[in-house]
Amino acid sequence: VVGAGSAVGASAGPAGPVDLNQADAAALDALPGVGPATAAAIIEHRDRIGRFTSVDQLLDVRGIGEAKLDQLRPLVTV
Image (cartoon, rainbow, N blue to C red; front, side, top):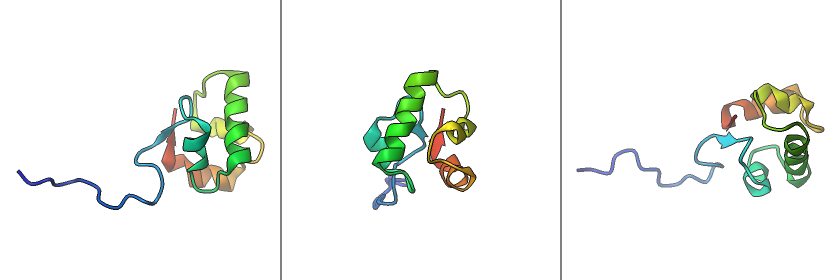
């Protein structure tokens, strides 16, 4: 059996979609365009409103606009 499908050099960010409802600051910070301040804002927003029910709710987080949401959409899940 050949080990087909195994990723050898996955240095382009997280291996799979990041769950906005479970991710810690380090996982969020690893997303492109998200630094420590935005990661903290996502966690603060989650703590304040409860679970994200849609990726589009990222627009309610300070520092995230349409362009950043479009960049993050394929990389995150709820």
